[in-house]
Image 1 (cartoon, one colour):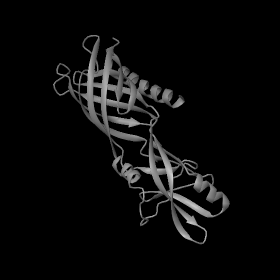
Image 2 (cartoon, helix red, strand yellow; image 1 turned 45 degrees about the horizontal axis):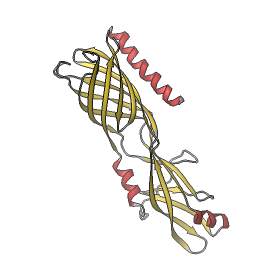
Image 3 (cartoon, helix red, strand yellow; image 1 turned 180 degrees about the vertical axis):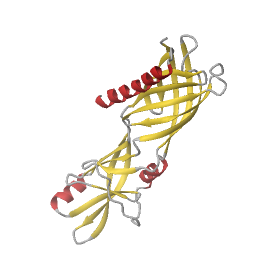
Image 4 (cartoon, one colour; image 1 turned 120 degrees about the vertical axis):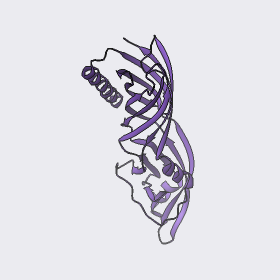
Length: 248
């Protein structure tokens, strides 16, 4: 909740600063549903060609289950593979500051959007547990165990738990195309927008230490589905439906 309020305050300051600098006398508020989750934005007109938006979006904590394999170092016997149940969770809160550019002025509300998303750098939480690994680690039969995702090795603790998260940049460029007026000519307007957040290469962090987990180049990847998530989330698609209301 504190993170949500902080991002909302930052967004409000961005719009407020624009309002003061340009002497703007139009302001709108909107609610949205998108692949970023549920959001709220304020928008102000900066010229007849552009409108500045700033807001916050909240993604509910959806979970997805995976069956994965863990490489375990067995005392005196080399490496064995053990199954483990993995949950990926999506919940995060992020802010945005975006400029809508209307090539034909807002009389024809087709626009190009450019800006940044910030916060919400933890994209997916990783949690898993194995009773078999817990028993082996506590008895000493298993010396150590790691969940292999690409070149990353996420450690399994003595209780048979693995925790971590996929992390990207804290500030991410955004580009999009849309239709609709950020500042309604009348009371309400409906907008639709399609764009992408450019997130770059993801990294994996240990949830217990908040440090990037070790990488081992050349180790065979036994968890192909998780590796695909890591590789393909370099660009995050945004499909957004917005209902805007004019304040003044």
